[in-house]
Image 1 (cartoon, rainbow, N blue to C red):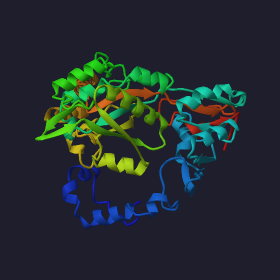
Image 2: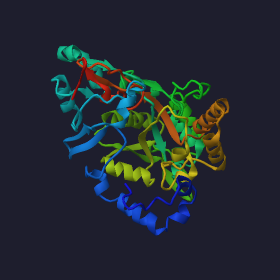
Image 3: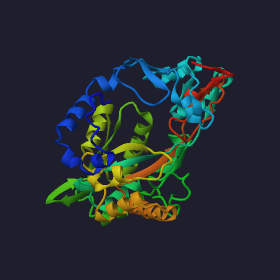
Image 4: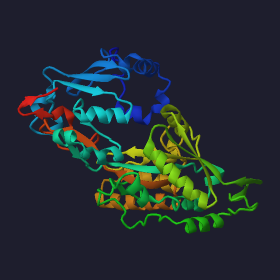
Length: 405
């Protein structure tokens, strides 16, 4: 990626510690301009990596094709780790935008592997004799958490008690049962419950309670002063009704269902909720630029030690992923300490304290971590599901003793 050798004189340490100084360096600018150009984004002759496969074809909206490299260096390590097992000479990733069409293709046997199947479709698959004859269904846990993000910089959500009231208006057990068909586990923070050492099991999730929500809203100064059914409050000298917009990415029926359930429960507490679907790119742009009241989001994690800076540090408010505006000096200091603490026991306790802070502040309303919902064709061996995204290692699949396409 650096054919001109522009980066040879710089160390990783310099790039990390002296980034402000180096930002004006002519060589850095030249390299960045080239690296961020169109050719490195999708032209196969310019895209390379150390993995087993090379980029072969990309037809927008149809498929991406990868081909196995000849004499790949990792082949000699295939017996040491599954991720060095690259048995398929070719991997074809097919794009099917419509879930119903994808399910039809799956049942017809036109797809070898499908993941992130909608819960409703997934529980219906065993009703198809052809599906059960040809596929295994897997539900490994997924390292993720789904949440509702609240804009803490908004005058309506600046009061912690108001945000806590919102948490009491989400019937999470009902959402898991009805929307996720039971294929999810409730969470109280960004640590997955499978991490027994760091997950804070002492935190009691906010229970669904209209009355508790009303009480907290009253404590925050919200009341229906004009009798129109919507509570209001004087904010910065102006009487404002509690009316918010709940955004989610269009086409996501599960998020839509949660939004509509919340809309109805919030109405009972005197809160008017406008549910708005946004096209994906617009949804992402608005969340990144803090143009929202509340939104439905999700984060994927890995089994690596937790690093909360990107999402929860105040330095990540502009340019990072702290879209909701969470944090203060104390939470920043704790995040910074967690990042450098090498003692696992100490880090676990620090992570538990951090989860408690997040629970009290309610910049996020934590909902659940879903099980991955995967179908893998029975003709494959060496195809066990995994907690690691995407939930399987397709390069390692085999048919009998023969590598497959």
